[in-house]
Every structure is written in C-alpha cells, then in structure tokens.
Image 1: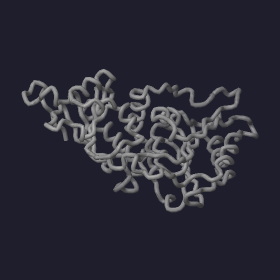
Image 2 (image 1 turned 45 degrees about the vertical axis):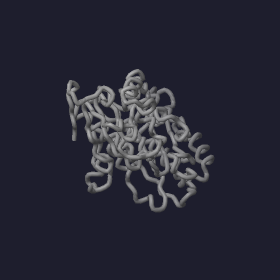
Image 3 (image 1 turned 180 degrees about the horizontal axis):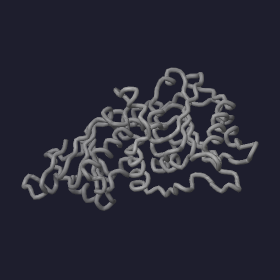
Length: 333
C-alpha cells in the first residue's frame, strides 16, 4: 500500500518530513543473502509498478535488527547522493541515520514524521522469488524475463559494473577458450552482532585439493578450452565486489548456502553446480534461482555435516562435461 502527501500540506514540517519515495520494510532474516534477495526483488517489482526506480529512494526499517553485513547493499539501492543524504539527515535531526541511504525506525522524529510518498512493502516471504508456499510447477518455471530485468537493473544501472556480454570467454576458434570457473568457499564470519562466534558449517575439508584439481583442468584431447579458476571467499569482499566477481563467472560452484543467491546476477546460459549434503540435499532454493535466471543446473550430493569431503574426480568430471557441451567453438552458447 502507499501513502502520499502533498508537499504543500500544512501538516508537513520541514524538520519532520522525508521527501521523495520511502519504501518501508520489515526485514526478517536480514543477515541472510537469500532472504534479503526476496526483499530486493520486492523493491524491484513494486518500484517498477509505481515508476519510482529511477528516482531517489529512502528505505525505512521497521524491524529492530542490529547492524549487519548486508547493510551496505541498501546504500547502493537508495540512489541518493552524498549531499542529499546529509541534507535529509539535518531535516531528521539525526547525524547518522541517513548517511547510509536507509533509516531505522528508532531514528524517526519522536514527534512524528511525514512522508511525501510512502510504500509499505510486502514481507520477503511474499516475494515472487521466495520458494516457500509455491507449487512444484511454479518453482520449475523456465527463464523469467523479469528476473533478467532485475539483474540488469542491479548490475548495470545501479552498481555500474562494467561488463561486456561478448567477453564471457574467448571465441577465437584458433586458440583455447578460457572458461571462467568460480568456487565459493564458506568461511567463519560475523554476519551480525548476535551471531555468537560466527562459526560456519558445511565447510569443504579438502579445499586445497579441490582448488589444485580445478585450476589445472583443461581439454587434454583437443585443446579447445582451459579453466580460469577463481577461489572466492565472499565474506571478505564488499558487496559490490561480490556481485561483480560472481556475475562474470561462466560456471559457479558452491556448497548449499545463502551465498549461492548470487546466481541471480549471472548471465543466462551460465552454469551452477551446487554441492549438497545431509538434509540440505532436499532443498531446491538455488535450483529454482538458477532456472529463473536462465542458468543450467547440476547438483552434487556428498556425505558430511560440518565438514564435507568433495570427490575431486566427480566434480572435475562434471566441469569437463559442461565445458565440452557448452563452451567449445562448436557448442551452442
């Protein structure tokens, strides 16, 4: 729902008003990329309908969550320049709350705040890209044009990531094609202050072996392709860098976890290889994300819990099959 007020209304006090469009969110699992992606997709759908995506947007968080690792992403989405942030901060009589492009409800003026144009956002569990409550057929819908529009809006328009669609891999038939293969390795990190020790589960125990095997992988028979391998620890990267690095991969590999939500930034026709174990083998979040984004999807099931041992021969074989089928000069892109 939306609440609009005329800027000439006598009820609007300069010291208690926020201009432009304000999107009002109640975030749930705010430190989890998958759940934040559902909020961001809601932002895209509602913003597109209300025709506000090209203008500045302020985000108001009604939840009481502490600061988290994904807060910086909201700064990119706000589209407010530094001078505007400072000016809005002065109006709200708070010197910190608006410097990031978003406001926490506790920072609103205690005497009341008016909004020029307010949009009350649906919760993330009601997002078109949240899989909860969907039927199996809906989850497995093919490539969705809106998801691609969302990708383009975020990566090119808002994050201004330089990306040449023709430079995915070397198409010179006289030389070996370089296939960009990135693998996300899970690390301990503190997602938010209440996360305790920040210990991460489902780590790969033979990480160095996996890296060595994939880094040396190439087409031994015809020399049509070779691997440009990148080991990724996203926890240490700024959010924009995460999107930039992942979006440039031809093949993304990772253990089931929220970081695989980044597949929505990848170009259609790319590939996702998801490694799953135990109870996570029956979860299909990223298969559906890959399908909606127009990616090919493969699942590798392994044994393990907190520590996972990956069969490098199996994984290398899958990468080799994908490379031969889709990334040679004679293969469809």
